[in-house]
Length: 324
Picture 1: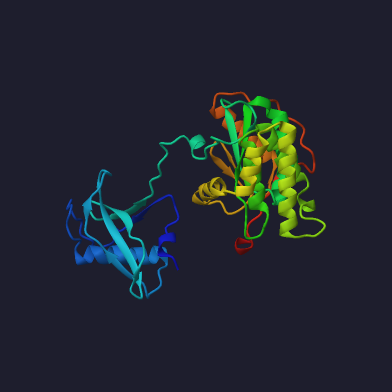
Picture 2: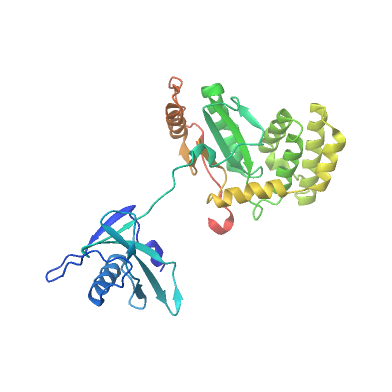
């Protein structure tokens, strides 16, 4: 049992008043009386449904920045192992225990997932809505979203929406996804249209890559060939592209994967619409609603509603085998 997870509400107040309790006045930076410490422990045990083999240690009262309340730190331990300390608020009269979770909202959510340095589709860099998709080029769910959802979004919202992909190859289940990401980035460094043409092709033909041998070596060979051919069409510096493909430097991809992991991502595709996360199987009308809300928040007027197909595109996600 994880004691840190038992306090789920965003804010709750636990009343300690009981018959015969003696009110205590303000007493900052002081040890709690045995009676008050016991009342805190018993109430936390009851509210948390804490197993009997957990020890609860209640720290001293210290000053807080919440009027009428001091802070106390409570530590849970079992078999000599301590959990992360939890901070509670204790009223100065000793009758009320509270826990308040604070969240930093000083940063604009749009900046939480940066689109900087990535090839983009749709609107300009000043588009009111930016959609960042963590993508795996070997993921069938990503391929479906790429083929159905994003064209529908761009068709409806035009230059109001800008779409950016960040790499999140699920390398434990998709053996050639890393090479596909590296190659597409090699091309994207010289040509945004080339990047999207290559991504379009890989997503549309993922099931054919590596055929007929069905080997990783063949898949890698096919990916390299596709990258070179698109580079020629875009008239890029072929020597530079060839050197990039041969080097297979995955540092940019690894940085993107770390960004995703730090955000708690464990499946693809995972979308961020002006910083609001969307994942899992959701009907396209839900996606439209999120985009409309983001536009309104930016002071923009969403386009008129469009008829929704009965079996329209939806957002779906694939997870590594270990997390399914």
